[in-house]
Each structure stands twice: as structure tokens, then as C-alpha cells.
Amino acid sequence: MTVAQRIVELKNNIPPNVTLVAVSKTKPVELILEAYQSKHKIFGENKVQELTAKYEALPKDIEWHLIGHLQSNKVKFIAPFVSLIHSVDSLKLLSEINKQALKSNRVINCLLQIYIAKEETKFGLSETEAIELLINVEFLTMHNINIVGLMGMASNTNDTEVVKKEFKSLKLFFEKLKTELKPSINLNLQHISMGMSSDYKLAIEQGSTMIRVGSSLFGER
Ligand SMILES: *Cc1c(COP(=O)(O)O)cnc(C)c1O
Image 1 (tube, rainbow, N blue to C red):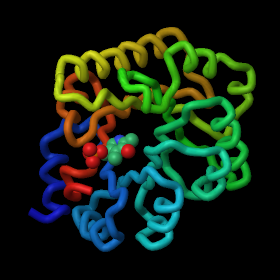
Image 2 (cartoon, rainbow, N blue to C red; image 1 turned 90 degrees about the horizontal axis):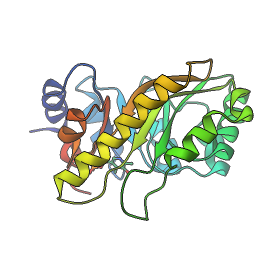
Image 3 (cartoon, helix red, strand yellow; image 1 turned 90 degrees about the vertical axis):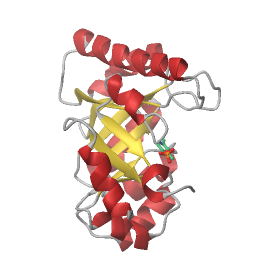
């Protein structure tokens, strides 16, 4: 099967309310263009430099998502075009995104990355830190960002019970935030970005609305 066929097949097998982010990191623009032939328009990258280069080389109706860790000093490179940043993990970073979005006269959609895995290497906020961020007075003044949901990465393990529990905890936290915090100009919780090639089915069962799938579409990296 071609990459375009794999995308069509995957989309036919997920519920209509689940958005596919095709993760094209490390893959060449030629292959992304092949994937684009499927009419799929949402692609994800984890590095700013690679994202920017691909944005410049590829059709402008692609919606680019940044899924990897973002440093404040690199926000300016993606602020003019990025559609969704999945990996916001501090107020400082959010403040820089807001500032750069204002310069580009845009509102940038963001997800808060929540730490759900056991492993220490994963980035993200604890639930307490996420709440502190969302009720911070500085956050309330940021009008060029829109927090549209949460993102999480499960532990890298074959133990499906562990992965399931982690996804479930993110869904529960999402529901808790939705009941405790009123929607506002910059807070509109709609998405739970969870699930990758190895665990997206489990993630969808646990309430994912956005899956980030790379290797099972584009091949191993
Ligand atoms: C690479 C990556 C993915 C996709 O992983 P696959 O196993 O290739 O599907 C998803 N999310 C993030 C944050 C990634 O860095």
C-alpha cells in the first residue's frame, strides 16, 4: 500500500470525531506530498527547524501541528503559520507564544501537555501545575492564544493496562477541567490529543479526539 492509501484506510477505521495528525517527522517532503494526494491536510512535526523547512517547501493549505517540545526562543519561527501546538508545558512558553502570535496578528491554538506516563523523560505539566497555569492572572490577559485541549503521551510499554490507565486519567482530568473552569476567550477545551501508532486504538477507546500517528503510515524511522 502507498502512504496515501494507508491514510485513507486509517481514517476509514476511526470515528468521525477523531482527528488524525499524520506525523511526518524525519520523512522527506516527497513522501509528505504523496500522503497529501490522499487529500489529508493535517501533518505533525516535532522539531521547529524541520517544521519550518517543510512548511516552506509544501502546499500552503497544509495545517501544521507542532507535537514536540518547544523552546521559547524558537516560537517566533513557527508563530506565523502553525495551526496547533500540542506541547505547551509552561506559562513562560505560553506567554512567548501569545507575544509572537500578536506580532503575526493571529490567535494560536494550543494544547497543554500533561504528564501521564511513569517515565521521567517525558515533558509535561502535572495536573496541579496545569490548573495553576489556567487560573493565573497572567493567563487571563493572553488574548492571542486559545487553549483548545490537552495532550498526553502514555508510557512506552507493552502493558496495555498501564497505557489504558494513563489515557483514562487524562480523559478524567479533561472532564474535571471542563466542569470546574468556564470557557473563556482563551480557554475552549475540545480536544484530547492522545494515541500514537502503537496505542491509538486504546486511546480512542478512552476518549481521544486527536491521534498522532507516524510510523504506521510513513514506515519506521
Ligand atoms: C513521533 C511522535 C508521534 C508518532 O509516533 P509513532 O509511533 O511513529 O506513531 C506522536 N507523538 C509525538 C509527540 C511524537 O514525537
